[in-house]
Image (cartoon, rainbow, N blue to C red; front, side, top):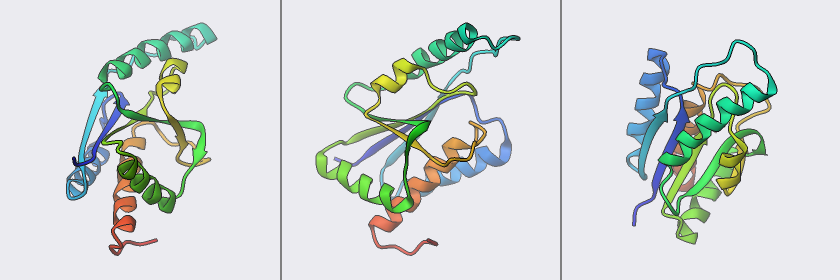
Length: 161
């Protein structure tokens, strides 16, 4: 059974360049797996970012993400507190997932305020893409590019290291 990878994110990618690049990597990844990208609507940010308001926004967005997650999916949260992975780590990880029979994988990207604890609790792993902070609309593109790089490494195909 071919590997199915879902990238689930809060909020649309509204920048045309980022949207175009995301579509390009979705196309490229089609050689290696069935990869899809879907987004849940983001919640409007409150005027005052109190802890209660932040918790409410994360909870609403988190429930939207969890409703998109297919049962039995191996879920990975993209979270600043997660473990940092290299491109080579991703290649090994993809191989491990395929070997373990995890045929459906999802990467979850939160909105501006991050992921709700319920989402983090549903995920089997948490990855940090960098110690740098990225705009959340860039994260889907970065994840897709790194998956593409990981598949290329795994297959021994040339790619800039």
